[in-house]
Length: 172
Image (cartoon, rainbow, N blue to C red; front, side, top):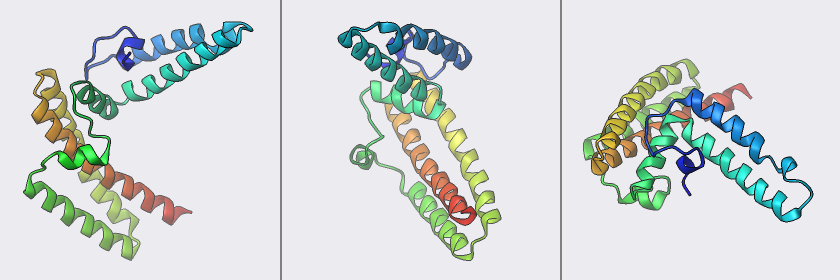
């Protein structure tokens, strides 16, 4: 059973998140372990359903995670390092990312958070545009184009996570 199946939805990168959250609340109340009574088997089953529902909502309400999940349902799992390593990224993109990461390392060495934030804004914009490309590709069932685009999104996301970690380090 997929995350979409739990909500009786067809797999898609396009979802009404507000309606999804409303459906989640309804199902969470319905499947809550406390409503299963005293039967241990029924309580365990309800706990499993509840956990699956919570995992599903985390993935489906996030457009990035949802796109990766739709791609996974099409047979390509980019979440693991092993699978991602098999995706051939264009050399010019890899060089660009390497240069940006080196620039971030230099900024981190000087401890200039404001400069890192400026870099993050540009990367976030690139990530968002690339996510839109991936979503368009998934809508037309172009798995190779979606795979390449989401491979890029993965690199951008890691960069942004590194900026977040840098900020946490400086603020702690």
